[in-house]
Amino acid sequence: MYVKSLSLKGFKSFASATHLSLEPGITCIVGPNGSGKSNVVDALAWVMGEQGAKSLRGGKMEDVIFAGTAGRAPLGRAEVTMTIDNTDGALPIDYTEVTISRTMFRNGGSEYAINGTSCRLLDVQELLSDSGIGREMHVVVGQGQLDTVLRATPEERRGLIEEAAGVLKHRKRKEKALRKLETMEANLARVADLTTEIR
Ligand code: ATP
Image (cartoon, rainbow, N blue to C red; front, side, top):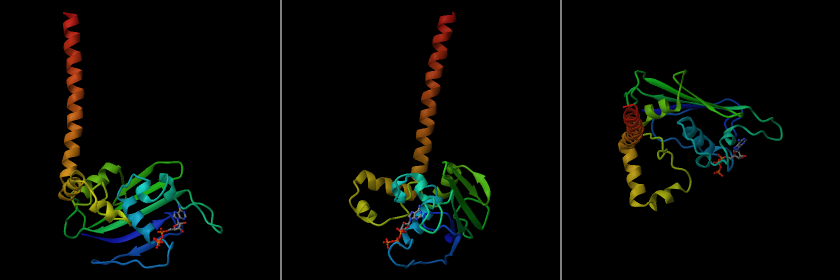
């Protein structure tokens, strides 16, 4: 599995439609300061469902939409599509090529699609989490983040390992199930009270 291409339109400094074709192995992006190298990495994190504006080096989520320049008006939406080569079947989906798209409008809200079909953020996260690309985005290590990893507490480090091993997804599911159980138990207690009152 590898990222085959990335298409950006209206994302940060990429106002015009831009297509980046990538090959297996190591890819280096070079360019002068402020030319948009980190924005490409931000686009990768964003399309995979990143929810934190700070992780994308912005103040609020809509900062990912092209804000305009002296010669070009701001845009109303940002779109990123990532194409993954899945010939090795690393992603649990019956396609050898998988596209994941995210679109965001200035008035809020993101839309996601897998292979052109609209889906929820959860579907994107679930699809990627089995492949080791977890929702916490530790696969994208930004400038200065290496330091954070090196200084992590044992608990934080355990979180990273759990995510890489795919344990985190099951932990989240367990927490969700436990919350549901708690609600059910409260409902059952209420039913028992009502039954006693009626008798
Ligand atoms: P460096 O080598 O200094 O780390 P870089 O090549 O990684 O730089 P980026 O940080 O990716 O550069 O890009 C910064 C540029 O992106 C700035 O010029 C900034 O104005 C522009 N930019 C960021 N967000 C937006 C936005 N929403 N609209 C327009 N331009 C934006």
